[in-house]
Image 1 (tube, rainbow, N blue to C red):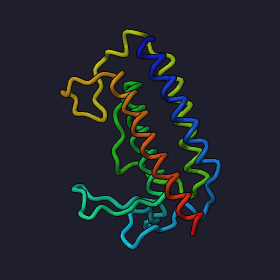
Image 2: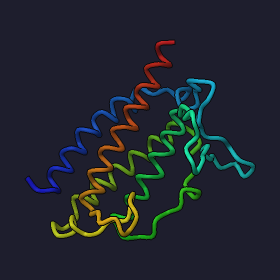
Image 3: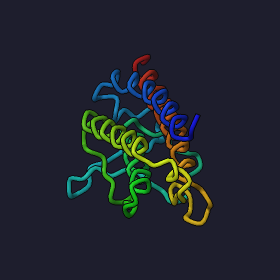
Image 4: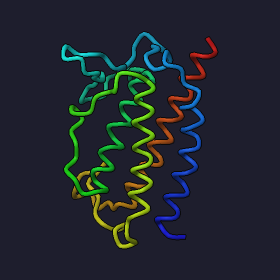
Length: 171
């Protein structure tokens, strides 16, 4: 099995879990605050939806909303795609939440198509090309490392989204 086929096979498994949870989300799930201390997304004075953020992780760590988690997926996955396609990485501050859960899921689904296509189109030799996301450029990581990291990070975020959806539904 090649790195490409392994990463794509693993991605398809993760994506099936994502679709299971995405299909079950209601619009009200996205901004539901599961705890008093949460990170979410807020509309700013210009109308853009921005996430709560701290450069140093606070203690205790706030519980994210589904809205915040979908913003996070949009940010890191778009940046990983930038790295894959050799375009300058977008800055976290430039990535906003679309404003509705439906639009956030549509944007994530579009990233999934672009990611799958990008990986499929990679030449075998590109899998060993250096990668600068999510690691520093000098970390010695490759596109293969990044592809596997995307699968793990997506699994984590989707599991968190699913757990929040289930908790809200159980209330």
